[in-house]
Length: 456
Ligand SMILES: Nc1ncnc2c1ncn2[C@@H]1O[C@H](COP(=O)(O)OP(=O)(O)OP(=O)(O)O)[C@@H](O)[C@H]1O
Image 1 (cartoon, helix red, strand yellow):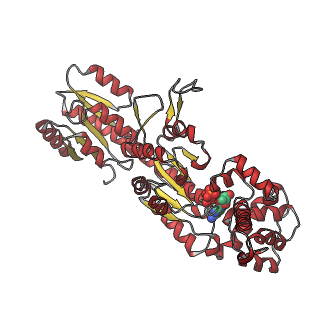
Image 2: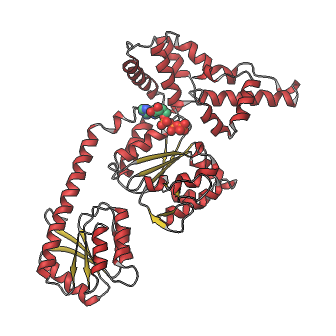
Image 3: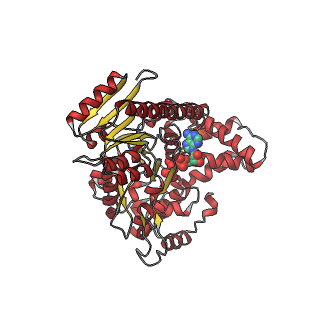
């Protein structure tokens, strides 16, 4: 669309009316695209549409009111002008309350319609300019300041993020724990078309199974014991914004069916209700598991996998991008120095070597943790890294002359300790990863004399 040109999507099932109105608008300099029904028009519309919609209110496939609701779930800033018949006054009033820009009664004076279209287009132009301005402003604190790294892998990832940020395509972020999946999700929000909308994260691994459905979809008052108030779920809360489902692989199967339905139908049903509510969200998911393997073992639904995985972003482990280790370390040291009001410390060269050779099972989170501790206390890096590294290598036992029970005990301890290292002593995260109830985890940790404080 050239600047100043008025773009109109015209929706009317009456072919004569549609042709005549389109011709009139075109002769007056509008760029018109006509549709015989609302679903076809909806398929063409998105939040990047820079014009206005003129739609009949009574149409067979989908009436103008439903069309309005669906369209406003996509972008409530698109001006809609409804064409009503004599006697449709109540409907027109309802439409105005729902946010329609204006309505005009048939038969109408084409000049009058043109006048409304021009004003609506001007409003749309201002909204679009405003969005663009905010977008540029957000770009001032660029993606390089959020997703730190100079390695080719991270540079490529930043480009991939910017390529897809402005679309509404569902993104699945894959990567080991602590690699920065949530940072990527936040960048997709901050640099995407929905940056003005909310960013709503849900850690699927931390939500108890019995309240999962209500957490995502909400509930009506009295839907179950304890539901003394109505509550909207995370999907509805994220309306117009981004919903981030972290560790989606841990979602129970029955809920996966419901999430799939919500994504397909773009609507949710609160627990205890029969009414479907339209939702307009962009879905970003993350997983540290290989979801295709989970699909083959039947713990993750294949249809959901393909629905959430339209774009796949992989965040590489830290050990595969050595160039980033020192850069990230210095970055976290600077942050910690400011946060704790301590002087910035630099790394002796011997420690640099140790850091470069380390495996980083807990990835960037582990590095951040070490940098913070380095600022706070004078324990040399080497000592910290050896503490972290000791478990998989030291005290290994020879399986040939060891009983099965001893081997099992040894491997159990190893698994627990590695998980504690990866999650820097975060017991909740260990419970999630190993799929253990808190009590069992506590028992096992005390049996193996493991104290979370040693891993903080
Ligand atoms: N490239 C990066 N630049 C700046 N900070 C980073 C980067 N990668 C990770 N971080 C920081 O490291 C920590 C862990 O990152 P994040 O929580 O995004 O990892 P994750 O992959 O989502 O972890 P988990 O799988 O455990 O949820 C956070 O404090 C995050 O801010």
